[in-house]
Image (cartoon, rainbow, N blue to C red; front, side):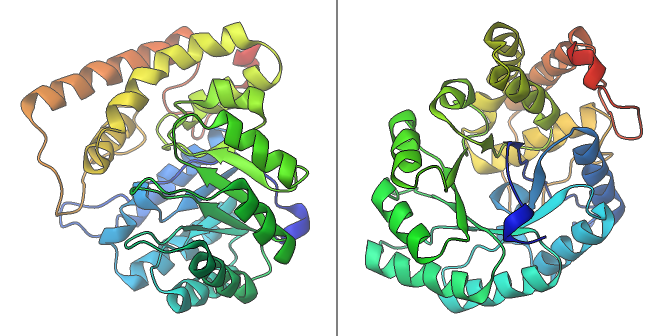
Length: 321
């Protein structure tokens, strides 16, 4: 799927990597997660990203997850391949391979292991963009506080029109969303990348989508459609029910992995909530709170007539009426 026909207008969840008891990738379970994504009516899926534990995967495993997703989904849902590398050469090679393997787009995080100025980042992304002709999504990963400016986004897009999307991960994003849309004449779409925490505010500012976890993607997809359709009150009812889950999970990346997989298990989508080592050992109080939050999510689904595991069931769009 190339530049002209890949668009985002909704939810693009990050698919977690399921593991068996020996911490090997559970391919059957990954297929179940992808089936859920199809049933959830998402715009596309992304893997292997931070929320997929990509940093614990071998090089071969990263490639295998993309190939598996493309083959399993059979174009039912587009696949965005995440290629996070501090090396421009590695990132470009991985992006080229992802395109050859059938990915519809590539996403890469800004390499911020050490401080890099804008000129270094331009060279980094220029090399990646020269390696592909499918759309690029830049994840504005900014643990040190620095982030990409609207002018940087606009200049890179002018040089490479297939740089089409940017995923923002910072507070007070509305002004920046609007600035990017203005400086690029709307040609670079903006995605909210904080799990959906700020989506209702940012839908009004013009975001084209959200990149949350998979376990709540059907809830956020419905929230997004309601808000875009002008039914903000109904959207808020769903949003307020899922927000505590988002806030809790985003405190720590390893905590997120456990909470995400335990919710998928509670929904009957995943049979084992295994996180690959090294990882955080949950405190008893954390486990109890995750269980409490999961019960609330299940109740929310029931209240809105949404199936706990829609995979293999008839479309539940009629539940939105």
